[in-house]
Length: 195
Image (cartoon, rainbow, N blue to C red; front, top):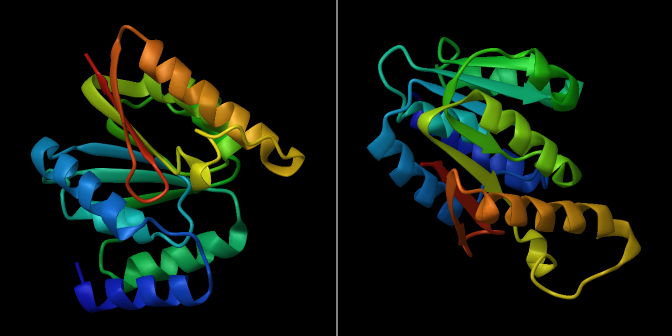
């Protein structure tokens, strides 16, 4: 992997206010992946490819990341970034709406990383559980959503997102098959391990 290019990708994304994974969140995930050495990772929400590129460092040999992005411009940029970072043999981008694409996937994954439409997190969870390998891990970024999720926030604009993120937390913490921790790193990270 080309670390110099990775830094450039990160700087450009930050300059253009494209939401990418925060450093402290990435650090936590890096430690999980380092230990797990996953063969297959599914990422829901590619953006410009930054997090997927970062995750390739910890893949098992011949490991693969499948990532889904619906915005065409982002897909083009992500493909360019992945090529620059010299990891195009490790990352497959699927263009389109994850809500439509996920049900067509039949593979099993060691890790599912959710970082897409907040209002769809419960749906993404149901799909992730269907495809998770034994001892697999589901990571959901921005789970505390600027602190709104744990407050009595109820403004109309973000209500659906907040409601669904709360639902996601409830479902992962009450599911007897999962062991879930909510960390206050970045914008909140939910880590759910299949028991």
